[in-house]
Length: 394
Image (cartoon, rainbow, N blue to C red; front, side):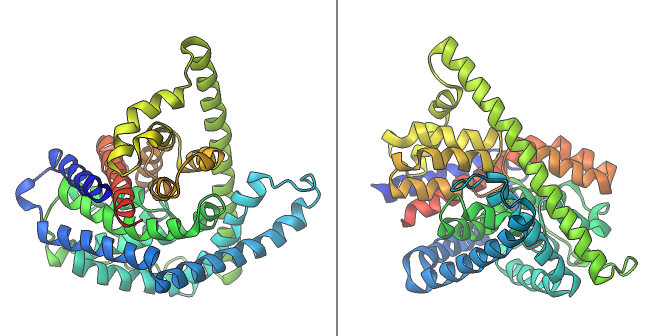
């Protein structure tokens, strides 16, 4: 029965994307089929084989070590701030972003990361039927971050038509930055974080290929040219990435304070007036979505509340909410929900992406703002599709 529900769910998601398609005649169904099969095979590999277990364990160990090294610096500066036996969220989850950001900067400085992004992007372009620039951008989004990725393509930005710009922005919203992957792994199981990263990469292309199909002229499909005009020294780069990482940690922390407090206020107000919390109410709205993802109806309302929280706030708030009630869910529901949460598909991302693009090109930033809701719609379908694929396997 679970297989039937998952297959129906996949067809519904593809159908919802088809309903808002810009150009249904140009949809490349062959490439979409190939990518869905790849999603299923890669999920099977990662979650159901010893090889997959080894890969995920190796990645998890790397991030565990990195978090331990980050803790050395955090303890030196903030040692004694926390009470014995307590682990403040800001210190243990957010501040390690600073150290991970430094490592990304080092890989960028020595041209290792651009090399990886170009070649993975080139290979992806062979299976997704899209341009090399779109494929590069998807990999770059996962490596350097949602906002920073547009700096890597700023030379091409002004020349892009709205349809190609949509795909670039969809990738930025569907994936997550490597700098915060370690933070996610402190809240949900590493195997689901890694699986979501892989699924969202292909899922972004699948949904964008349906909502926003087009053909790219090979002569216009030029990869970004590396900048030579601003050559930083190694220590200048370190300082910049340390501050960038700290800014990200502070911004995420500030958003969490605001959003968690706001949700608590709204929940309390709704509970006093209507006898039901706002999150629980949203849970009923999202329960059918949770059900078609393969979550049993007995858990669908609670799961729907977590999904809605992610959409209206951000993934961190939703992950905290999930960890609070994780013991009420089955292992399969936890897996589906965890994969759904690993993306930037929320309302605040519209402003972040539009702002990042506008900082480089005001005209293109206004274009992004105009299709912002459609961007969120597509990115949410990507998250649902990833959850569906996991539900089909586990």
